[in-house]
Image (cartoon, rainbow, N blue to C red; front, top):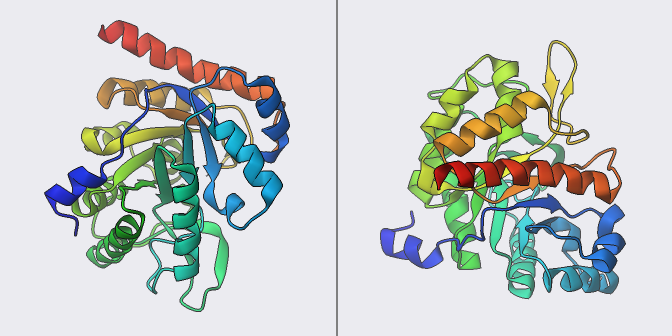
Length: 287
């Protein structure tokens, strides 16, 4: 595990707590040409593995004007087998090239030991054994990158019999590994509805110093189940839970995710400004 001295050396240096957007291909050119006012951009790491010169030129141009985060979906920190060394090397190369303010991954598993990958971010059992596996992989990643990473809570549609709650599991992983927490407010709300727990209890259990970022997104309500689609505007119950997070944990850099049925850039920026107003209001009340 990471000792206290190493954790301080690796610590994420956060940017100001403003709202940003996820970078999607549909908006590449408009962002580069218009350079709208926004807090920061998040790029999916795997979208920039390899040497596609056009994509890297566009990303470099945006990186020159906005803080950048790299958010991964394929490292599979929770898999029982070893991490993919090729994936780790590609990630290290990307991090060195763009020097993002934060590198994040999902707290899940998505790859089998034979390198077969799932298209879904699959849930973990909330057990001591899973904690040891995840923390070992986080340690390996942080050591290779020479920096603290953050892990994100994922949406789930089934639960394994476990030894602890999801929120206790997440907090313990952060405590043991020294990683940060990327707290996805939409995923907390989706899981609370699907599995029948109080989402405010989840927020109260989070170690404030470990939470370094928020995600907000839209879901689809299918009656019996909420599906984390990232294909709609943020719903009102998620905005309300976000307000509660600001009161309990405090403001953090906040990202609007919109990955399917992607709207025109002005619509996405308007959603981002909605989040920014909540952040500004919290700062004004706290002053």
